[in-house]
Image: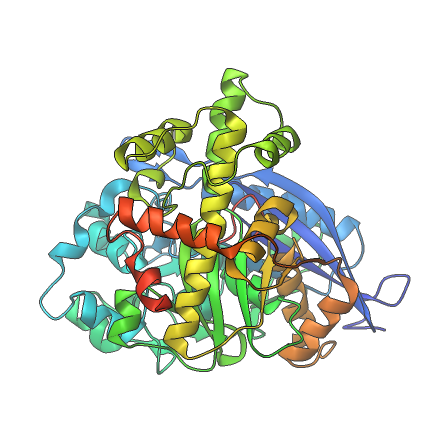
Length: 518
C-alpha cells in the first residue's frame, strides 16, 4: 500500500497522532493497512500547568516544544503520511492582529469564572444558553471563560480566538480554523444548525470576527511551515489533517461497537458517559438533568455528562506518594479489592473535588458533612472512589437512556480507565449491563483512523469501529452480585446529599488515565 508515496516495509501507511491530555502529552504513530492497525508511542512529555500571579495557566510553549520533539521522533520511526492534533476542550488562546499569542492560555480549573454565569446579559440565562448550545452547565465552559477574560486589559487587542488544538495546528501550518467537535463545547455553537451562533455571540457582546471558520474532521488543515519542517525533520509537504480534535470525540469514534444501541464511557481524568445520537436533546428535562450535547464525527451528537473521573484517584495518589503512606497503584487496587464493600459513598461531582489539592482530606470532609463515617486506609478510600464512580456511571447512563428514549444493551468503557479492572467490573455490577473495556488508547486510535479515512484507507464510522474491534485487545465484564446493594448505595447518597444526584434519580423512575476528557 502506498499513500502519497509513503508506506512502511509491510505496506502500511504511517500517521502521527499528537494527543495532549491534562497531565501529559504524547506523539503516537499509527500504522494502518488492510485489516491491520498498530500504535507505537514515540514520545511522551509532561503537561505541567503554571500558577502565575493572575491565575492558573497552561505552559503551551512547553507543549509545543514537546510536540515538535515527538514529531521528529515520529519521522525517525518511518515516513509520515500526515499529522493530526487532539487535546482537551473549552480552553483557548487569543491572538492579536499580527497573529501573536496574548499570554499563556488559562487553565479550565482556574477560579476566575466563579460567579460569571450570574452576570451574563439579559436573554443569556441558563435556559437560553441551553436552547442554543445544549451544554451541561459547568463553570469552565468557554462562554464563561470569555466573559471573565473580556474584563482584562488585553481583551481589546484580541482579534482571533483559537481553541487549544486549533492553536497548535495554527503554529504547525499558519492556517486558522475551528474544528467542530471542539467548537461544540464552547457554549457558542448552535447544536441544531452545527454552526457558530451569531445571535448568541451578539447578545453576549462578543465580536463575531473572533471566531474562525469551522472545519469538519477529515478536512485538510494545511502543510507544515518551513521552520516546523526544519525542527521536526519532516518534509514541508507533510499535510496536517483535521481530526476530531476534542479528545473525547476521537475516543468515542474509536468505540469498538458492533451493536447500534450502546452507551459509552470515555474514562480518564474525567468520565464522559452517555450515548451517541443522531440529533441533540434540548428539552427542559435534559437541561435540568445537566446533560450536554457535543458534536461527534459525521454529524453525530455525543449526549453525555461530565463526571469527575480518575482525577479523584490520581490526586489521592499524589498526596500519598508525597507522604510515603501508600504503595503503588497495583498495591492500592489490591487493598481496595480486599476492603469492605459499600463502606462509604461520595458524589464525584461535588465542587470541593474540582481543584487540585489534598483529595483524601476532602473526601473525608465530604463523608463527615454527609453523616458518614470517614475511611482513612488508602485501600478503603480507593474503594470508596471507584464504587462511587461506578455508581455515577450507572446513574448517568440510565438518565441519558431515559431522556433520549434509548435502551442501551452494552456499555463500552474506553480510555485509561479501561485498564482498571475493579472500576470496569463494578460499573457492570452497578449498571446491570455488560461492559466491554478498551481500547485504552481510544483517543489516539480515533485520531489516526480519521487521518487514514481522509486518505481513503478506512470506510465509514461503522467500518472504522469494526477495524478497532478486530485488531485491539478488549476485555468483557458480566454483571454479578446483588443489584440491590447499588440501589441502597444510591439511596444513601440521595438522602445524605439532597439534590446532588437528583438529575440521575429523577431520570431513572455521564481518555487515558492522564487526562481524557474535558
